[in-house]
Image 1 (cartoon, rainbow, N blue to C red):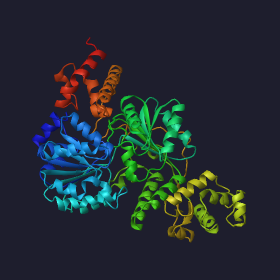
Image 2: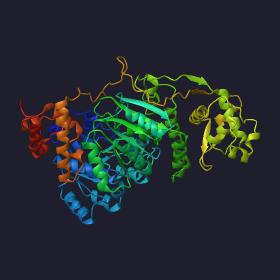
Image 3: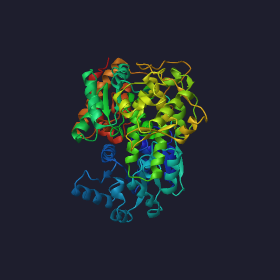
Image 4: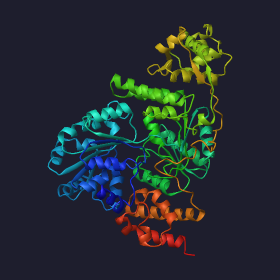
Length: 612
């Protein structure tokens, strides 16, 4: 570990390990298998990069995305580490040249996708080399019960038998207990050490709103974040472009990001987001992996995320500096229908689909929670929590009401209309609305027609949505979103049990978090204490340093954050180093970066802050 500590300082420029890192590294150096579950931004990469340099030989890193592995390789090379990648984005000649350097022992870390690694020729070739570590990033993709299972990842379970003498490190940011157990059993044969860091990010304020006028709701959220950087997630590429255009028209510096854009445009937008202040990235889930921007002050989901794991990972990109940040979600019954369709459209077993529907149910339960949001969020990952004091429900409690009679009215209307209509039509029946569709179906003759006139359509919508979240109703995918009664719903209809619901009292404007002296609002994440805000002069210097970083990144053809992450530039702005010796003390400045970048950054600092 003394050698690991020296590499942390000399190569990567850090003086101490973050929570969990030392434990993982020590286990790997002792030749033990490890499953590490660490939050987004917790520094998982160092958990295999440092052992790779300590142990020598060859470390193979499995990474799911070409762009992500290219960025990690570029970042390591800037630190003087002999890292390479073999992937489809490179020509055959370049891949062959890379392999020759690997065989010659010139490469310490080799990045590959699972599809390329698990070919018989590659496995046979690796067996002839001094393999010292196998690192599998995004390891939740291995588990057949995980929400992001990939068959090509599942094949990695053969590695334990093929390279039984080589320690395996499986890394993920999000894995519930079932997924963790599956990874441990199939990849690591149960012989491993689990390092699971806490999932709580207490500095992030959590808020969920039901969609009404989602564009207006989105603009209301952003009104509280003028001059701040954030990420807005959308369910489709088309919506991503539309939302970016809407925000541009409203005066925000908003940029789209999705997989259909050409690489040059994506790279340019990513660099702008990393470098410029107050940029909003409007993106599909294609954006965020590997991005290191400390001052993201908000994340907004304009649609229901796919799973609790995805939601947790995406909101985790906010507030990495430990300062207060916010996570907002807008969702509606239409989102639920789309997500159910996605699950049913998968080529997977009925058992897997059943589990995915259950995962979606858990996310809906979080959305419809009548009490503190952090309790169900952390419970999903196996952690207990007291009311957090830093979510919309803690700040604006919503009372629970007895909705048993109203729910039975809904069940009667659905049963009488044949369990084939969506929520809008069922509400028309309950409200006694004389629509063409109601008359065409003859539903004005039903005994349930008009029995719910005492409630508004908005109230009925809320009630039906919460009934679906509670398992009383389900959406018939094949029937284009028709509402069907579940066995639990039939039980309620027949007089069994009761139904409590939270009154849908979400105001048109988003209630802002109210700072509290006794609640955890504004509390820094325990592993990343928030520093005092930068002074005006330090803020101006930081802007100059970001401009220089972008210039150097363009010269080298790499994303801006790979030169230095935001944390390093912020530390640089605070310290204001004048000499190489002082520059070497900046967090994130290792020996090679000191050699390559001290001169231009010191010059920029001198120009921006002349000595008094």
